[in-house]
Amino acid sequence: MAVTPLKSKILVIENQPDVLNAIVRLLQRVGYEVFATQTGAEGIRLARNDEFDLITVDVDLPDVSGFEVCRHLKQDFRFYRTPVIFISGRLSGEDCRRAFELGAADFIFKPFDPFIFVSQIMSHVKPAQT
Image (cartoon, rainbow, N blue to C red; front, side, top):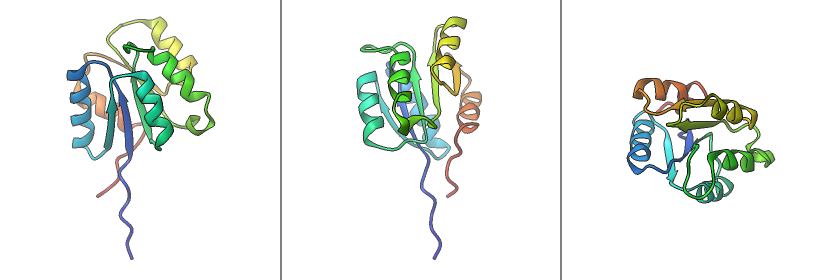
């Protein structure tokens, strides 16, 4: 009996609705199961209640910063190996440094090229073959 692999699950935490929708569509198009929210608190709640293969987080969120979300998640042993990728419209070397110090796997600047964005995501987690 063949077992169909489950889709890799990604949590997207992004406060800008148009960017959020674009990311969700891109990731679904290449075969990921995507969950999305616009706030850090909701992102932390979703992460704790499910298992994700990768989490993307915007630096600037309306309630807490993406840095705080990452710090909170990385303090929990369940997320130690979960790649967290930061997304930001601020071209700041300081933001990059801080993200990597908190355990980020990558940092993507907005606006991003869709092909490069998906390639960066896929370098950290592959979609399941269907």
